[in-house]
Amino acid sequence: MKLLEYEAKQLFAEEGIKVPTGILVSKHEEILLHMDAIKGKVVVKAQVDIGGRGKAGGVLMADRDTVIETARKLFNTTIKGIPVQRILIEERLDIQHEYFVSITMDRAKKQPVILFAETGGMDIEETARKNAGAVRSVSFCPLLPDVPGFLLRELCGDAPSDIQKTVNRLYHVFCHKDALLAEINPLVTTPGGVYAADAKLIIDDNSLARQGIAVNRDLTEREREAEKHGFSFVELGGTIGVIGNGAGLTMSTLDLIEFYGGRAADFLDVGGGADSERVMHAVRLAASVPSVKVIVVNLLGGITRCDEVARGIIASGVTVPVIVRIAGTNAEEGRKLLSEKGYEMLDTMDLVVKRAVEVVK
Ligand code: GDP
Ligand code: MN
Image 1 (cartoon, helix red, strand yellow):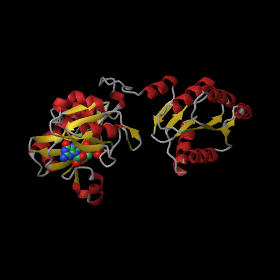
Image 2: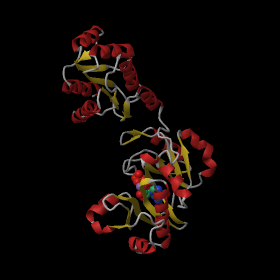
Image 3: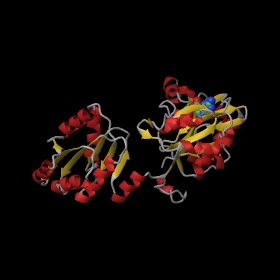
């Protein structure tokens, strides 16, 4: 499980890594309660589970006067399609130099491997591509409680010794938290010492119980609803709602939407053998996504009966237009029910997706 930056930073701090002081908010108004703690310049950071936030507009600079407005705007955007539900407001560090450090497992060697670069920051991928020598790496016996000193020196080169210490602390996080990945980019030097300006931590799902981490923490209301019904559901920020049965069919529907220039609002797989009630809940759930303008129902009747699907769609009573493609078991009956109620239906997945893209244009 990938932790969000603020969660990872808490765990880093417990191992003695310095992190900027920060305030976590889920509404811009909450910032008002913390104005005493906000002195000068700050960084306003979307807590979303994706890389490259900075480049995608998820990391903004602000100060005491502009922080609320900056956070308000950030809450109203999506970062690579992900809605911003939490924002971390941090004191802005006076960065002198940015390093990159990342610890993971080398599966072939069965050893931890640490990568380090003297030029960290948002362009690390580019740096690594252009100059393979820019990223150094070391690996060592996993039974050692610390990174051996000679390897730290080899890895960190001329970087200050506090950087080496921080790399070793990050290794402690990696071990103690059963991590698959522990990364700081950028790891920075400032006049006040070495700080983790960013934090990335992926914990092995097999160890979540040992780590005392609840798997489904912080679900949104809609995600909880999806879970209740056993739907696979992911919000995607676009305008075309998608309901399918089977991950393959649902994914292909998303692909076609992209192909025709549309953007999906969600991925919703109702699973096998859906009855009318399940379908009804699925349609209501897809319709409750704020960005949705039209819903594509693309269901293949196998064990699932298309007449049940039709009844579910009709029972949902949603106002968002629903365009349907059903095929397979009892498809004729299902189509008849839907046409009586005036639903738009098309024979193929291609046609139904094209039509939905037209509707939202
Ligand atoms: P990412 O794009 O998701 O990796 O987000 P980061 O947390 O790494 O932030 C992106 C970039 O913003 C960093 O590489 C820094 O250059 C810059 N940044 C982040 N925090 C600070 C800060 O406290 N002070 C300054 N000056 N820049 C920062
Ligand atoms: Mn980063």
